[in-house]
Amino acid sequence: MKRSSLSLKWLEVFELAAQRGSVQAVAEETGLSVSTVSHHIRALESALGVALLDHSRRPMVVTAAGAAFLRDVDAGLRLIRRAETQARAGPLPETRALSLALIEDFDSEIAPELARMLAEGMPRCVFRHLTRPSHEILQLLRNRDIDLGVATRPQFEPPELGEYPLLRDPFVLAAPAGSGDGAEAHLAGETGLPLLRYTGRQIIGAQIEAHLRRLRIDLPNRFEFESNQSIMGLVAAGGGWAITTPLNFMRARRFHRDIALMPFPGKGFARTVSLFAPEDHAGAAADTVTGALRQLIQARAIDPAVERMPWLADQFRLAESEPVRES
Image (cartoon, rainbow, N blue to C red):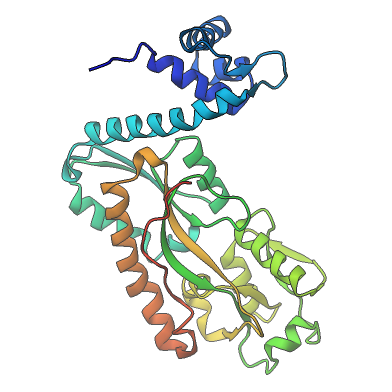
């Protein structure tokens, strides 16, 4: 068997340098000295006999040879990291640690049940559970600060992670119950009530604003909220209306009798909620968490919502279950 003379450390440092464009940035991230980082890169280039990075440019960029090499290096390192993770974890019941972040949407009804199910299936595991907005969860995954995360799929930028779709969550209008105003009147600004917006920093808020722009709907921006419960509370009190989703409505249980949901007029749109994982953490744990979440979402969110509002049946549903791997 022919053995490679290339060092794994060289490959890891080169991958980071190609991503960061700076020897200093790689040194800060890895804890190595600048001279050691430079040595690893030079040693790799010398062993291959080609220049992989253009060191004269700031930030550094990969050469044509470096780009071709990087594609295979990325794939190879992902496989090594996945094998290392799975070897350390052992069989799923023997898993010792799992860090998981969920969006706030799952925090009240689904997260406690999920924790119970996972604790039973992985009795030796120490769990770390976080609640964060979707964009923060995706960044935690990219930084490898967590193992798995449930978030809204970004609309424009690919998450660069393994994806396990969970839920199709359509956008609907929420208005004060008994107001008598239709969805079209709210979108036309004819009701005298303000639109209560999700902040544009959140993926859900950005998706709503993008759709309103496509429809050329321009409504005054007086209120923005990070908290779904604040929005639902104000709608219930008659202080405004909102574009939201059935999942967000269902977890605002104490406001249900004072809020009316309506289909979004014309061409509807929806968000996809998925479980995301770095490629080296995809596998048995991701499959297990995905299966548990789909079961809980159906029982705790979809079934009660469709029973209450049958018109949601074809829209509010589990997403296609096949994993969407990183491209």
